[in-house]
Length: 256
Image (tube, rainbow, N blue to C red):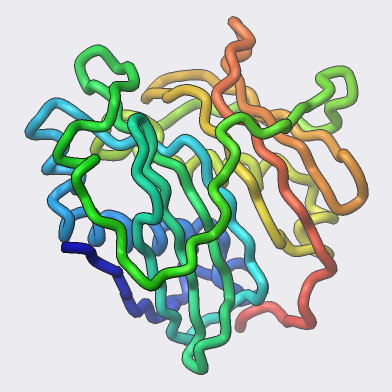
């Protein structure tokens, strides 16, 4: 049996940015919630994996925002698995407006880890046995080793992060959306006020935990493109690399 998850979300004020647009982190949280609901239907939700000593970990996530929904609007998030391999499971998302306009889409790659050893394992048989929906048109499979590089000598924006309790999820590590918030907080005010995020491609290298000290670095590859890296500052160990694309902001006014 296969399942396609469709959820409706009303956009509330605290999920919006300074201009009344749904924030990218709130959008990702909606997607994450729908993905977990879909996983529960398949019998592979967070609790299902925990009973076997496993947990989910996001490896790669590519989000494209075509049009920002705004405060008071209602959106639909549609998600489903698209491919299942020995070590990875792929999942797509679409975000639709009331009139079925495609507002955003995303593709992602997930892995399973042993919660005791904190290391990746092959997908258990009960996950590999799931059936992906028929009749779908999956987005192209994401490359597992994308070429996202950052010239450390050319970094122009940095931010120190102390991982707090509210960033930790049920898998006892920093939730994937928290990293996106940290990346955005490291970007200069002029870019945030005059441009809007159009696309972000995230590659998660390793997990981090409550109390860790991290360093966020950003570098402008071009006027519209930023490269990002999050690392452990003492060891230099890479936690995440990402690339974001920016465009001129929509004609919006601040929410009142």
